[in-house]
Length: 389
Image (cartoon, rainbow, N blue to C red; front, side):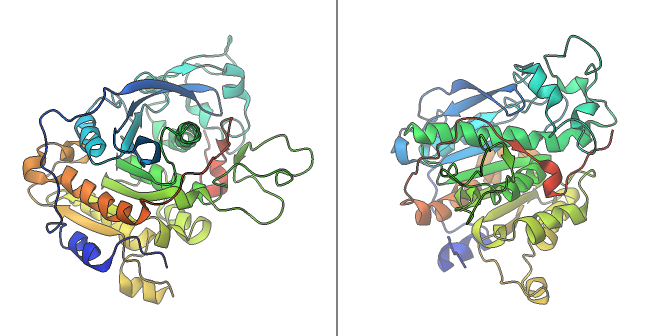
């Protein structure tokens, strides 16, 4: 079993992380202004992101990806994500945040043919694009995408398509890794609401993808490239991308009704059991947020089987590096709002403490060239997702 947290540190986290030292919040976090970056998904959507670079050992520094929950009138600028990014930069982490397809500035379909004709998002039981108003058979092919284009009663059913955005983020960061800008041997996720379910589902897919582009011969005869996760390879499967997910923090996590409890549990029990012992997680919810508490307990106890008694009943090893924590004084605050008022709620402090405990053990993990050059799809159906317009 891999234990990223030493016992004293783990105990401190479990009782509230109060015994760990964290530098005080500064009014004006140091560091360069974030840089806007563009990158493509496998189905031809151009996504926009902001890269906040740390000036501490930049080439070998880990990176944190910030995830808001998709939805109407949401984008990466809403909430105090910038404040958290500044704190993380000071602590030695690069930070990347982005807009999901159809949100903020991520509204252009650069390759309409690829978008509307690929088999991973169109047709049969995976027709996620069938939820978009204005698509085929209308011509010319629609070349933009806004959240309002999704049918109001079916927008939630489009959620699995966002897994391809996370795959594109990973490729974008791996390209920066290969250019010696950062080190993707340690990637952290910090998400709110539905982004917790999306993020956990995506981590499961990373355990079915080689961390480094397959060597010659592994793709098979006549196979031109790595097109989708989980693409079958020839011979022994190489080290998985899941090893690079250093940890995740889920704030007011939520499981959308579309994704059943059974399907969510299978992400761990069937598709990626290595998550339990290799990807530490922290679930945070406000002390009077009943829904946040219920959902956090579902992910911790039911999905990850964090309760030692349940783990024993299922013949599983206990997990010591994943935690669930109530935010005292948070009242009914939910999601990104819990990042506000750090002086009282200390949510940003808690996040940095949790990550610092993990990174202490991962700091010497070397960077490795990933060698991926083109975006790949996530075959959501292979991980228990399905769509029926």
